[in-house]
Length: 55
Image (tube, rainbow, N blue to C red):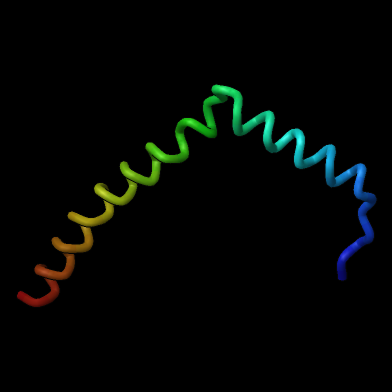
C-alpha cells in the first residue's frame, strides 16, 4: 500500500535527484561504463558455454 506523501517532500526528492544527476559524482558517471563492460564481458562467456555444450 502506498503512503500519502506531501508534494513538498516529492519536490525535495526530485530536486536532490536532479542535483545528483547534474553533478560529476562517481556513480552517475560509472553507470554507463559498467553496462558496456558487463555486456562485453558476458557475451564471450555465453558463446563459449554454448559451444562447449554442443560438443
